[in-house]
Image 1 (cartoon, rainbow, N blue to C red):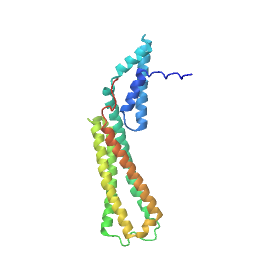
Image 2: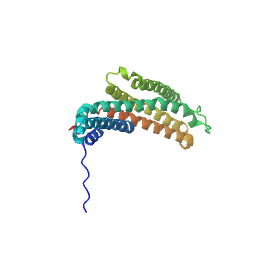
Image 3: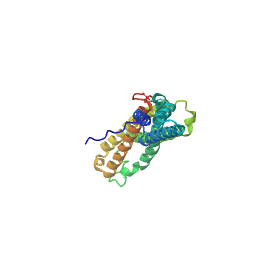
Image 4: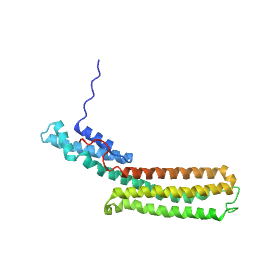
Length: 235
């Protein structure tokens, strides 16, 4: 016995599938947007059915009234880019101060003193890393306000998100180099640090935090570049 063929997708299902294929961004926000779009289309279709149209014609009318994917997708993608920008800036604003506040724990109860045999360059790099971290965290906090309270004043939120992503990627790369130099000098000046558990754990946490911040920032740039649908716009 042959299996029954699956029912053909209606206009609303086809439109929502196309919108889903067009959009790139944070999963939860994207899912909420798509669900909201589907509900709006279904509500409009129900209203047309109540007015006397057939279910198929009601769906077609609702889709036509909603707008083509080429018209609709850029606005959705812009919101996704802004959401990703907020995520990246929030993570940087929170993670950098926490990393620096907890940094002394990496040397806690160590069998040597970090003041012994420390070069002038080492302390310059340490101070630079710390002060730059707090400065960047403050700037990131202002960026978060720009994405929220200040969004009403932004003429081009997509461009803002792209600049935020590019700035974050550049900063993290340079800041990471300074952090790597501090770590390298630490091992050079205190070879026993290479096997000191608190230092190993701290550097692992630092590396993970920087990697995640970099991932968020790269995605911010990528999502901000997708302001036009990437799939056919037949709807």
